[in-house]
Length: 541
Image (cartoon, rainbow, N blue to C red; front, side):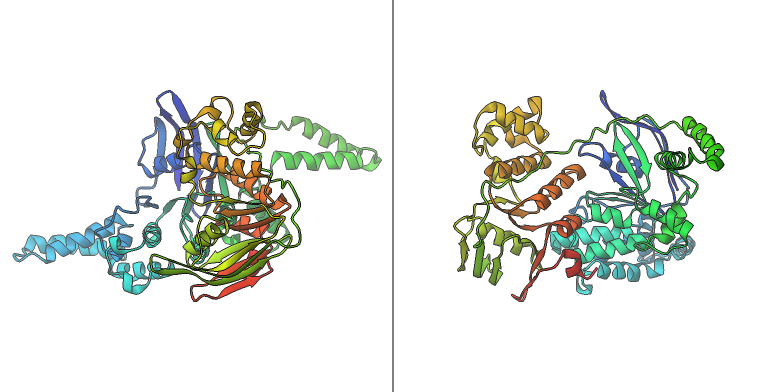
């Protein structure tokens, strides 16, 4: 158990959190959500001890071990991959190194022998003899092949380093596991494995993520960061724990594998006030006129009067306005791609890719080679030329492109208003400022220079550009990167409601499932799998 008591965090005059009181229980998985800049990652650092609170205390049992997912992918460059994982349990790793030093002494003394014996005892208590085997299993589970376990971290690809650091955090069954955006840069297979791992994990998990599907699947509780407070709710949308509550009363079974964990975390006697009020109101409405039930109805009226709803304070969360409206309807001929081939730096990224887009198609793209999707979209957007093959657009089609790397669009000294004015059919400043206001750039925010914008702000600018284009065919390469959950939701809804065609790729499972009606998967061997099904149907879930 991790207990937060009266924690306040101040940076200068700004108070990030004030008087936070939370108990994080064993067997529960807590998802921390909140707008960008609300302090989610800072709160994790307070829990881990990396940041001292201005006031209050974070406590745990002395014997409990906290493990944190490291964010510095270059911190272990000169360490063996296996050793990097074992370093997840720093005490165990230190004992291993100290033992090796003692045993390697040429003048091994009696004192050294006694010290080694104590170390061996503690080593055994920590299950040290199985450490390398356990680390190897974890590495294989996250997709790091056995032949790479003895390599140095600097010899791995960036995406492989991410997986090793994930294995490090999970190693040794920590009592408290802190994860900050654990699904970033992970492939689908590894994300699925991590979901199952966390569902089965018996200790405390606290995770920051913008991946709604991931949170819904693994979390038993949600810690909502808003107005400098952190309030804990059951699940993202009160669905998991409430469902478990009803299952407990109706003797139903299992939801998403969370029944065991949910039962541990669930306070069965806790019914939301709103739910109780509705229950009483329904009874009163039904039986007030019934003589045999009138006394009970009167009793319930008195009970209702005593229930005081918590003061409702509007959330400080804001949703951007995202609505893609095409200027004209597309005709029957949309897009035909034939035999696209492209080699970059000696690597064949696309190999004879062929497909035809039909009216109403919203196609999600998958690929063994992540770069294949981006290269394909760049060719379709006219930013790259293929080595061979053709791209034929219908005469009624106008397209617009959301690039994964958008930095080249912001290499100017323009402010946001003047930057967006370039793409607006109505250049009037009042109109552009009004539009930016709906995209959360209000007041002086609209006068910021584009070259100093954050990643999330740049994404909102590009989305604004696309909305103003009036295009009837949209291409999105990872549109939810850098966005908070509110903006992701707005993008999701905008793409669902769009009346034209969409080609897109994303690591957001919910976006893929709710938008796509067709899946195209580009395999490394050149095969292209093309199916008119949903994302979940394609995955077989």
